[in-house]
Image 1 (cartoon, one colour):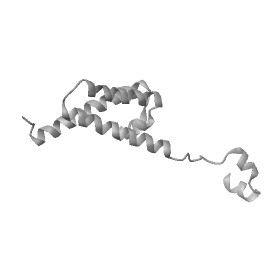
Image 2 (image 1 turned 90 degrees about the horizontal axis):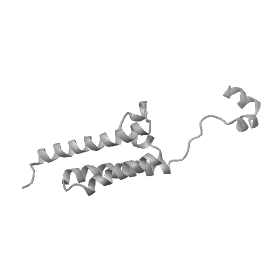
Image 3 (image 1 turned 180 degrees about the vertical axis):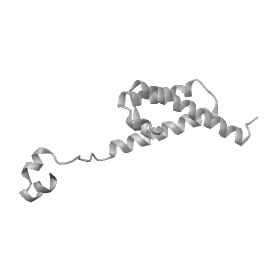
Image 4 (image 1 turned 180 degrees about the horizontal axis):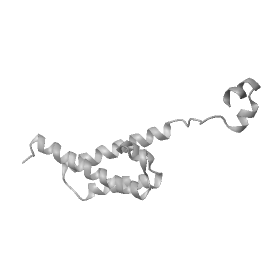
Length: 116
C-alpha cells in the first residue's frame, strides 16, 4: 500500500532535514562557521575536498541500509545538488582581488594615483 501524496512529501521533507543534519555534523568537523553556514548550498561549497568526500560517503551509505523510497529520493536530491555545486565551483574562474604589487609598480603614475 502506497502512502498518500501529502504523507509522502512530509516523509521526504523529514529525510531531507535528517540528511541536512548529517551534512551539518560534517561541516562542524570541518569547522565551517558563520555565513558559510547560511544555507545548505553555502555549507556544501565551503567544505574542503576531504569533507566533501565524507558527505558523499555518508549519503551513499544511507542507500545501502534502506528501502524507503523517500529516503532514496532525498539522498539523490542532495547528492545531485552537491555534485552540481562542486562542479560549478571547480569550473568558475578565479577572480583576482585588487592589484598585485608587481602590477601596481608597472602602472603609469596617473593610474597609481587612482589606486591609492
